[in-house]
Image (tube, one colour):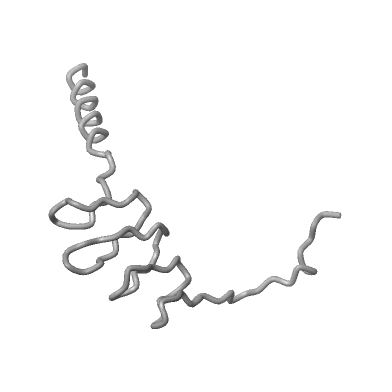
Length: 97
């Protein structure tokens, strides 16, 4: 029983030590690293930049990116792509008064 307890503790401590987050490395050479929630964007010539938006979209052939819900345009701007499927009328909300 005691040996089983020690074995379980050893396995748990090994698994917990494996739970550390990997750094957000952008390239195989491990030269560019972005923040944990940033997105790596290729800039060309094996260079990368960091898009500061979680789940941001890199704009191909440029050095900019767009936040979630937006897409890249050919003019260098971001265009909203999401729509609200079920808009709420503010008068329908019960405020408990």
